[in-house]
View 1 (cartoon, rainbow, N blue to C red):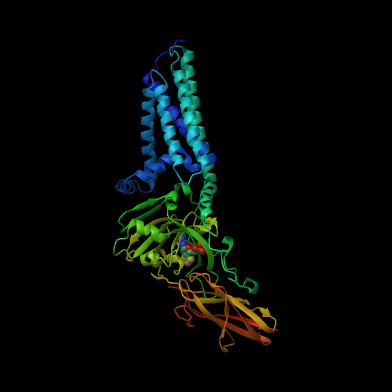
View 2: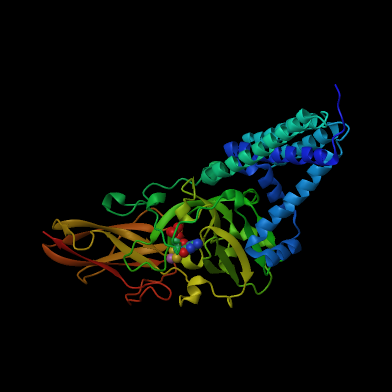
Length: 505
Ligand SMILES: Nc1nc2c(c(=O)[nH]1)N[C@H]1C(S)=C(S)[C@@H](COP(=O)(O)O)O[C@H]1N2
Ligand SMILES: [Mo]
């Protein structure tokens, strides 16, 4: 057969179009199996992981919000130069180009294999990309080595080139379209996989009096109270998620989810409370949170002396300031949580990763959709502190009557009163009840799970026919009894006794 050496421009296009086809089909294959195994995403993440902190700072300072775009543009340029080189080296024979594309494909396969958070299916994307890259390179190269002077030869090269360019474009676009819809599912699956080793300690029997009207000890995720400033619930794709730890530290950290799961995983049962909870209010719930200790991450970063505040930021711009001391306290065990009752965090509760700090109200300690932890001082006020709320916000001892509900009609005679009490992170020692300002009577407490969780209580009282006012008060393990003094929720949490009026007959 009469063949010729392709011109440099044709040779360069062989490399460029074959690489584009490889990346496009790889992106589509990844969309079908595991978005984070897309060659482009994998190379991007690897690049971020390996970029020196100074360069990252420069990129963020120079490009700001567009730093990811700048990275992608830079990456594309490097890849294009390599692809053109592969093409130009193959003017005599397609072998060098095929070998170079094959070698890069192999690198991609190895990179995916070495990621602990990606399943075996993830290897398919770089494998498909490699095959498509080598095959299209050979195809176009053959078309380029046909005699060019004939119209058929030229047309043949141009049609093949156009077909490859279309394939690259269509597969890349389809892959992007698919992942934008399915990223959430895949993110969720990745976290679900990480949760398989999370074995919460089983609860002792008798942790609630749900039969008498209290909530269940663990709050189902769908019933967990929700408080945030987010107009629309942020939907975070795990593939793009990173947590930066910086500020007054010895070593800055930039963790993706895989890096996060390399810290020891723990599951703890924690009752969360909102500062906006009125006396008797519903903003208190309990869950088994799974994640890693914030303490472990802070110790690895190395907290500098004087850094008394950890300033956390969410993807939605919300910020919170938590005392560093509380996050370092091993008994408190504050978490970077990604699991909630054995499930990945629901979007509403901060997917993929949030903070949970026992004993502090959520607005200073429970940032959802967390992406940034800055070690700083309390001179830097966070979101709600800027708006007049307290800087420090320890949860106040509280108790609530759940049954009977306000203005209920109950049968006269012996009646069960039941409710909830909490005093994280010290724990509840005692709950008392009284009717119509009479003598206080001790309530029976539910089984003790840990001092950072609520306890249910119940008591039998005698109700004569007519209207009655029932009150309760709790005492924590430090001996502090709930004050009767009424305080509003602003600036640092409501106080006072909960009372319920009911009618017996
Ligand atoms: N990003 C973000 N995180 C946030 C908030 C918020 O508005 N935005 N609210 C905080 C408050 S005030 C509380 S009480 C808890 C509530 O968490 P939950 O909605 O999962 O119960 O989240 C905290 N974390
Ligand atoms: Mo809150």
